[in-house]
Image 1 (cartoon, rainbow, N blue to C red):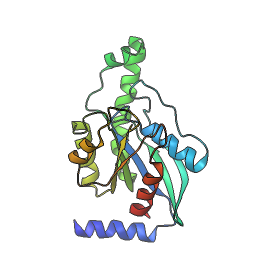
Image 2: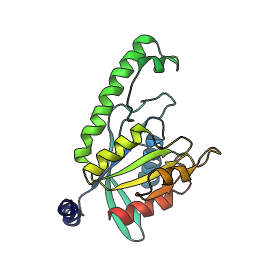
Image 3: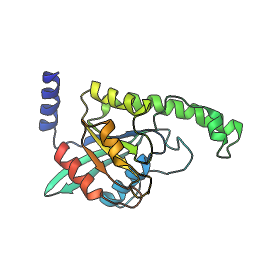
Image 4: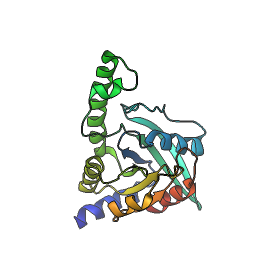
Length: 207
């Protein structure tokens, strides 16, 4: 385990001029794409992808290359990877609640399932991960436990992002209590609150 961590650190050290692949992982509708768009708008002036209230709007990995983060004189080049939302079950009938026809719902269900598989496969190409958690929901879910387990098994550095603190029902302490071993930043991706703190955490952990 120690040797693997040392090799990963050396790899990052000697490849610092290359962009770090930063994956955004989490359940559906926790705000991954909203966060990806916020980062891209802040650092590049253009969004990454579309957002929707319908689950699994992102069903393929969306990528923005050479996103440069400058914090306290440190320049960190990143390839930002917005992953499809991970779920333990995809039921086409759930999509019909949003007004989709049965045919459309079944197609989206198939695409969503492929997206989940793709998100897990991309772990082999990720150098670090932002795990986005809805601060208004119970964080200790099977999906979050599965994501954390896969990242930990591969020794991928993790920063927890407790999102949606602009909502009155947000409870970030639950997130801290559920996963105390990881660094955590509380943000609102939609309003931009605390984004500078997230950028500082990314730079300090990954530079």
